[in-house]
Image (cartoon, rainbow, N blue to C red):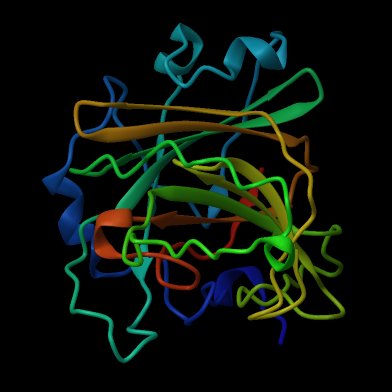
Length: 253
């Protein structure tokens, strides 16, 4: 199923960007530059004569003078019978976009009271089937904070965007995914439940300070009109897979 920009569905469920989330906006504080709400589902992009490397640090001075665009996030409904009820702890993400050196730098910032991250042990070099003993994980309900930017694998035609349910076979999507424990990972999908790792990575950096995540993802530059969608996972709320916070499609100017 395809959607028009103004009628975009969500990653998993159809909602409008101008949702009751507005009542939550006053509950959190952003940077020194007051954030604005994207107009007409369009995201502004700043251009800077800088090398992409100068913007990979989410705490770099160059980011502090850029206005943030506040994007409302919606919560997926319960996906599993064992899911406990959750409150809407992350109602929005502040987005900054910069074109520099042929790249699109995406700065994401959101409030999160808990820093859910860890150093993961390296996987054994030998494949599981060759090991005499299988080591079971003792952290079966441990999940980590994460963020992602999704975009079509190719430029949309006639202003029609792929389904936000991870695209479909005729209109696949690419997802630039960052995990607080595992780092950046590039994945592709052709519909819900088809997400596949590409084995590729991309430049990304993060910092957690004063109860908020600040993450920079470096993407290839995109043309005006390309849609982006955002997702945030809160590890302390057992977020994983399709259980997350999400936005609708927003067009890059």
